[in-house]
Structures are given as C-alpha cells and as structure tokens.
Length: 193
Image 1 (cartoon, one colour):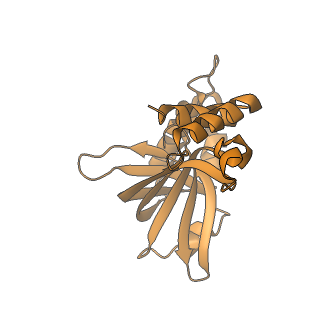
Image 2 (image 1 turned 45 degrees about the horizontal axis):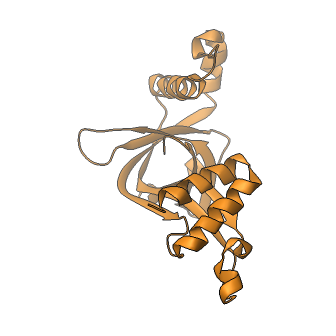
C-alpha cells in the first residue's frame, strides 16, 4: 500500500457500485488494522452516494505483467500452456467515513504532499501556495477515512509453474527491459528460492 498508494476506492450507493482512483495513506492505529486516509473532489458524486452502512473496498495494485506461454520451456515439451497475467494486489475492506473538518482536510493534503514530494530535490509544500488559495481548494474536497477491518493480499507470480518455466518467464521479462517487466522479473526470481 505504501509502495503503490494510488488505490481504487470502491463503494456502493443507491445506483450500484462506484469507483474512484485516489492516493490513500496508511496510518497505524493502537488497535485494529489501521486506517487509510485521502480525499475526493466535492464534485465527485461517489462521496454523496455512498451508503454508510455498507463496506468500502480500497484496491492497491502493485507490479503486474503479461506472461507469454512462449517463455515456458514446457511449451516445446508438451504444448499444454496458455498466456497468463502475473500481479500483486492488496484489498483493504472496511467502514468508510467522510471528513469535512478544515483542519483534518489540511492535514490530509499536507501529509499526501509531503509523502509524495519526499524524493524531490526541491519538495513542494502546502505552505508554498498562498493560504487563501489552499483554503479555497479545501472547500472543493471531501476527506475519506477507511477503517480497515480486513486485509487480503493476492499475488500470482508463476508460483504454480515448474521452476524451468519460471526461469523462462524471468528471461522473457528481462528481455523486455521495461520497468514493469523488471519489477515482475524480480518477484518471480524471489519465488525461485
């Protein structure tokens, strides 16, 4: 969740399921599994339509990549192979509450900015913008806080394949030499041990 903070926030309203893609920050709590905090644009109807009695779901997608059956040595041995997709995701389930307090919203905007600007040589800070500008922007958002009651990690990195096929996947991904392919190759390699 920390490494891939852009989550798909899924809620249910009177009209059915709704989803928004928003960065969420994880906070530990003294009890329970923690909370996720972020915000939606006030113009986004999802916050208004959310049924408070229903559970919300935040989906965090990590490394993922297509896997060609051509990379499997078993293709030449017996041909009983098909394409697949490797992935890593986390599903955080819980109660969603809406936050409108100006102090909470300002702290949320600061925390999100600080977290994502931390690797910059000259990090932008909320204080860099005029206060009245920030105050107006805060009026245009609604805070969301998901109290996590269940976490599910799901991953498929070829662990169901024989080691020679997994080694073939690593070679195939490394030959692509893209950031996504390298990330997935590293995960498949880690499961070879």
